[in-house]
Length: 318
Image (cartoon, rainbow, N blue to C red; front, side, top):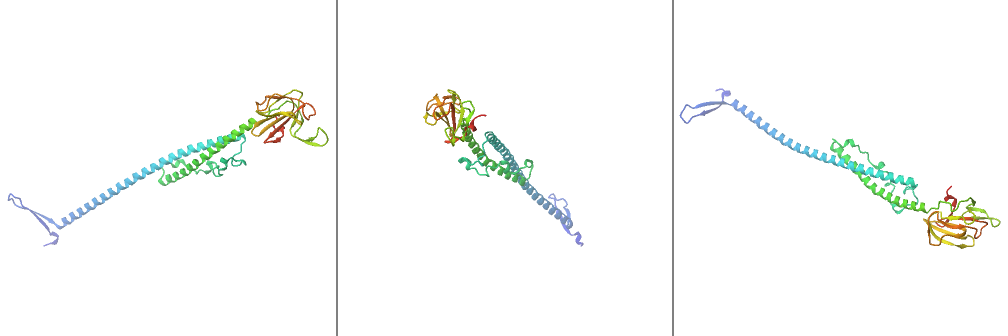
């Protein structure tokens, strides 16, 4: 018997007694069926494995997309905060510099008379933010890879830290500036800057030939020509701290203007004020005369700053 015809016979016998049916199944057909079955099982297994892997990949991909979106949102938020802080610091610096330029006040970092607050500000803190900030390209914010977004976020965090540190420094600078402006304003108000009487100067501040004998002496003020009873005016607001007679000055008045400024008006004829009285700039305080050690009617005028006599010419308007 030929082996190629070997196989199985399947006999089907009906219950009703009909003739049985015989089906011959050769081995070749069985082999083909087994091969097809195996291929089908393998295909199903590989397909199931791919579906599982795809689902896992899709889940990871969605997580990456969500993380990138979160990073992108943080980048945009930090960029907006950084820009607002940058603008705030820039405006504060501009205002600070404008006021200092207007009042001719030096920056605390270069001033030899620093306030305690200014002394605590380091040179690194005084560097303009624009010189410290890292360059961040806004075009990288949108549709960027994770590494780029992470790097950009890191750069923005550095910039934000710099700006957050710069804001209190600028606040301290503005507070110091406010104090300096107050001092400057008070000093300006206390500075004697008008003529006590109108006339030409007959004797200037400094060494001169003595009008009372031979040799030279130091003249502590200026002598301004003025006839008898010429109204003498306060050259700045202040308080009368002396109104009396002495051998050299004769009848004289001293005004304390504050901020270290004092003025003296000597060789007077009559007082128009008394000690302790507050006076305004331009207010008449006395009448000129020729009292004390004097060669004729005039006004001897002195300016003192922190009890040091200064040249009054430097404070008189031209």
